[in-house]
Length: 151
Image (cartoon, rainbow, N blue to C red; front, side, top):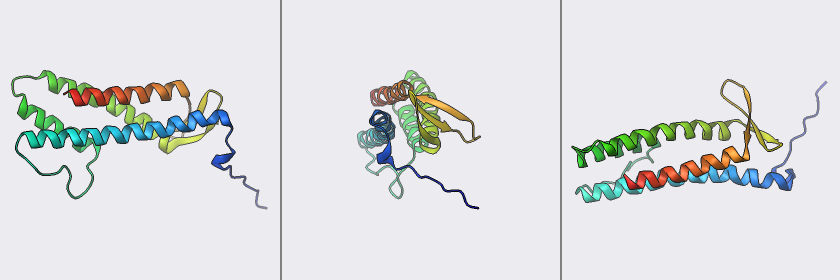
């Protein structure tokens, strides 16, 4: 005997879930905007140093490659000033934490739950993510973008 499986459409979510689903989209957009801002900053730094190549000409570089290139360029620019490199290291730690959170949301989203939604991580552990937690991480991403542009 085959049991019937009910698939829920996204349009079936309750109106109170709209803010939650919107916040998930904002998290994805904030990460992409961070990548684009970093890529633009590196392009401007290259131009200022006399290099006119584009960043990742064949394929779009990932965040790791962009951060490595930024660190290299800042170390060439500020040979005696290690504070910028320390700031980059701090930003990278925050970025790795947010990237793990983003991966949990994108890869493990299960369903809305009271006050947030449930996710499953790569080890299949279920966890609850609140809307406040999601909003805080989006805010962290936006602050991180400002910090990166200031380096």
